[in-house]
Image (cartoon, rainbow, N blue to C red):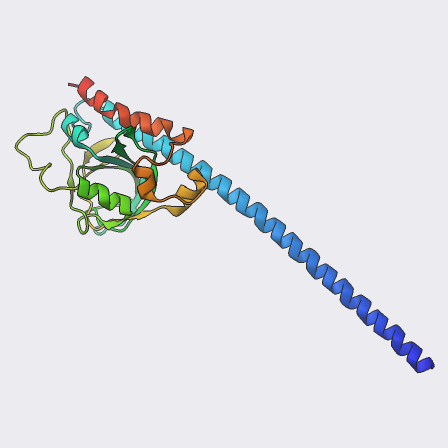
Length: 254
C-alpha cells in the first residue's frame, strides 16, 4: 500500500514537471512568434520607407539632369519615349570589368498618361574602364514597343535580349545619327555632376518583388502596373511629375 502511494505521488510529480515544461515551451514559442511578427512589420515599414526615398531621389535625378543647360536628354528622344526608367545612385565598382548593382523605378506611357511606377533591379555588366567605387545615377529611355515588352516582362539583359546604346545628349538629337534605328533602350549616366550617354552591356534587369510589395501592399504584375491598371501611390508624385515635365524642360532650354 505504501509503495503504491509513493509511486502515485512520484507519478504526479513527473506529470507536473512535464506540464510545466510544456507551458515553458509554449511561452517560448509564443514569444518567438510575437518577435517574428514585430520584425516582419518593422522590415516591411523600413522597406516601404526606402522605396519611397528611391522614388523621391529618382524624381530629383531626372529633374536635375533636365535642368542642366545643353546637357540634358534631347527633346526628340523624350518625344519618342515609350517608357522612362531611373536608377538613382547605383553603385559601381571595379577597375576594368565593372560590377553594377542598383534598384530603379520605371513608368510607361498609357492612354491616360504615365503609368504608376514599377520597380526593378539591375545587376552585372561592364562599363569599361573604372577606378574605385562611386555612386552613379542611371537613366534609361525605352524607345519602342519591343523595349517596352522587355521592361514589362522584367527579365532581360541589355545588349543581349534588348538592344541598347549610349543616348545622345544636348538640346537636340542630331538628325544624322542612328539613335532611333532599331535601338530599344538608350542609356545615360551621371557621375560627379557629369552627364553623358552610357554604353551598358550585359546588365540584367529583373523585377523587384520586395519594393513592389512594399508600395502596393499586394502582389501585382509589372504588366498590370505599366499598362495603367494600378493607381499611382502618393509617394510617386515627385517622380511622375519629373517625367511629365521632362519634355517641357527640354523645350524650355532651346
